[in-house]
Length: 103
Image (tube, rainbow, N blue to C red; front, side):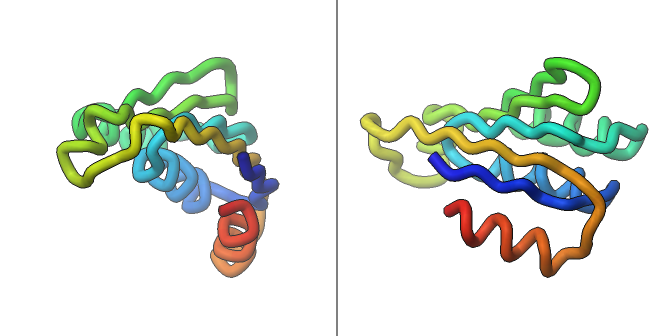
């Protein structure tokens, strides 16, 4: 399991949701900036079959099921990854560095 303390803002919040939606397994995001457009991103991910749950203000869980992922690629049934992301203010280079170190 990797953990990334990601400094972010609204655009980083969108990216955190989307990265969680692309990854197989569960992603826990804390510090998510919640605005109407970030909620729209969560709704779009749900429409694509991703489970997106708001646990508390700024705290979300995003999960791409193996079933959803298997339709796009073959996924090992023994893999159940989990990762944490915390969103703060920073730039995209910081996000790339944090996610790269967590993977």
